[in-house]
Amino acid sequence: MRFQFLAGMPGETEVILGELIDFTQKQAEKENLIVARPLEFRRGDWQSGFAIMCTRAESERYEAHRLEATRIPGHRHIRHVPNHIRLDGGYHFTTLGLYRYRDEEEKMRRVYRLAGLMECVTGVCSPILRTDLLRKFYKDILREREELHVVWRGNVNHFLLPLSPDHYNANHFHHAVVNASTLKDLFATIESETNVQFHVISHHYVFYLPEGFPGQAIL
Image 1 (cartoon, rainbow, N blue to C red):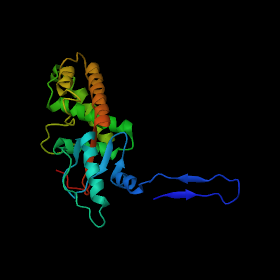
Image 2 (image 1 turned 90 degrees about the horizontal axis):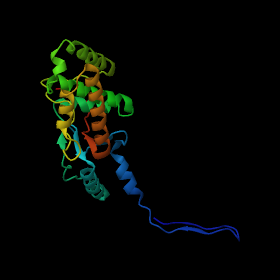
Image 3 (image 1 turned 45 degrees about the horizontal axis):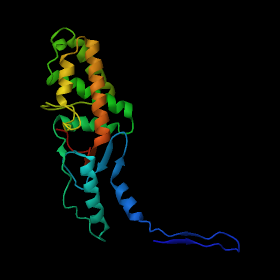
Image 4 (image 1 turned 90 degrees about the vertical axis):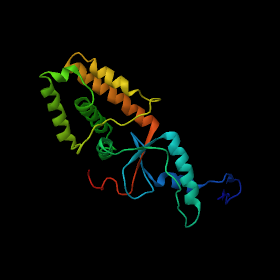
């Protein structure tokens, strides 16, 4: 589409916009975008199932394919989905919590910190949590769950989202938690490490949600 603006009176400047502007591309790119920051959520082209998480490189390839498919009049057949991680089990409830507060970064970070607390209860053996201090640790979990309205249901083993070793070494979280010497140190370690992971997710990953999300049945 070419726009040309011509002066109506002698002496006025003639301005010609000679570049072709493809408005359909910007529209297609934004069509499935729910929110770009602090975490990027997009609507998937499938009806049901769990949310998925992929790298930004995979998302860019998928969006390029999606753009070509949507350019064909009357045709929106998307042949594939990006290479991804299926966010089921405990990951599903973590994603629900993050999505609920998608416009409130502070609460999103609290949700992810809570996932880190839950990970310590089930998957990381901190010596501190073998003492009476476990009660105080649980009180913090219960308070955050109540205030954030986030709960994990069913037989859940993992809470923190699975990240590529290229972006974050999960063993580092385990090592830091095990080596925390006091409860205060443990809380600080969990907050620090979950903030690092949140930063990694924000910069390197994109979430795709099915059409029915989050209204699908809870496990």
